[in-house]
Image (cartoon, rainbow, N blue to C red):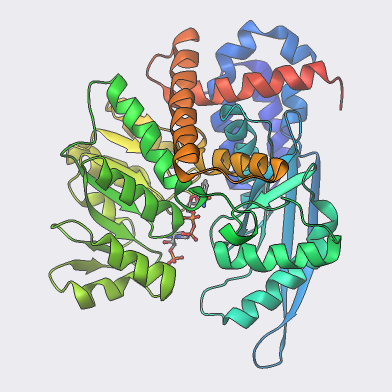
Amino acid sequence: MLKNEYLLDLLKTVEKRNPGQPEFIQAVTEVFTSLEPVIEKRKDLVDAGVLDRLVEPERQIIFRIPWIDDNGKLQVNRGFRVQFNSAIGPYKGGFRFHPSVNISIMKFLGFEQIFKNSLTTLPMGGAKGGSDFDPKGKSDAEVMRFCQSFMSEMYRHIGADCDVPAGDIGVGAREIGFLFGQYKRLANEFTGTLTGKGLSFGGSLVRTQATGYGLCYFTQEMLKANGKSFDGTTVLVSGSGNVAIYAAEKATQLGAKVVAMSDSSGYIYDKNGIDLDYIKLLKEVERKRLKEYTVKHPDAEYHTEKGGIWTIPCDIALPCATQNELDEAGAKALVKNGCFAVCEGANMPSTPEAIEVLFENGILFAPAKASNAGGVATSGLEMSQNSERLSWSAKQVDDMLHNIMIGIFHACDDAAKEFGMEGNYMAGANIAGFLRVAEAMKAQGYV
Ligand code: NDP
């Protein structure tokens, strides 16, 4: 519970100024709660109005996206870019295409991105964007026309030294390709303005795997610091998209058995261990639903009850689908079945009530803004390669990613210890991410 008067007052202002934005308020509340001991110690940051400025995006763009579907009918979607903070570098953060996208979700993601990018130690500010467009069930031609219309407005707000978007839910290699093509045509320049590009036009090796692999590198370091490891463990991975697939792959390489994955319709439980090659074929190539898994593996179970995946006994849970997917009941089920670590691959996948249950029961908890920072870190490495017009080897990039994730874990661990909250990596992540941005904002004056 927040007690500091200044933070309580500021939170009230944020609530008043942003009505109907529950996800954004949730993200700000979590960060404020962690920052209490810092604010008590650092009156200079309060005097410089760092937090008052930090909770207000530097710029928000909302626009219309008209496009024509395959039946020749006009469709209209809404586009967003929230350029939240540029204190430590150009804006950086993904585009999300999902029907649930609204300004609250864009702002929570943009706000989280500020601290996440800071934790990577690379020079990247925080942003997020996207649209309520649903790529599911659309033809490639429809997705292309939508991406071109989206970029026809977006291109004037981004640039290699200004704002460098990437992918997120619903935005993978196909969408980034279409977006990049239209950007290049309109801006009349070939620069590294988007990351997650194809390897033939400036993409980085390991970017596809980076968020999932990075999550496991962070988890591995956290487990090591607590006398544990992945070896021989049973793991649940929610989601079956980009983050989930490569988290499952790396966890398996590190000696774990992944027994369950999910999508928004249901989850599969394969006690023999998930056949990941088949999942990749279904999701990455054929774009099919997860339910199809049982066609090849009739022994696996498919269930549709929401949150049911968390009732499967496991040692480690990796929520890698979406925000607020792990609730209090899910957290209690994990605890009851002996789970000892929850490590977030998705952004803000655990509700505040779930996190409380995990902390009360001494579960190791890796918070998203630290544990899923590998994606944006590798995007940062893609930017560096684009700037020097060179491509690094997979080993080079993977080694750098691994070292960055180890560094992030220790930054969180050290900050938590320094402010008297040993083992609370969530507080550690918020504090370490905040301090770097706060110093930069203070030094740059009232902007
Ligand atoms: P994808 O679109 O590749 O996959 C998303 C997965 O989550 C799909 O399996 C999807 O199922 C499921 N999902 C999406 N929405 C819901 C929902 N409302 N309820 C249940 N399941 C849902 O996205 P990513 O893997 O890229 O992203 C997953 C998470 O990781 C997001 O929170 C994202 O912000 C975060 N993240 C991603 C990064 C990246 O590099 N890609 C970097 C850092 C964080 P279905 O197919 O049925 O919709």
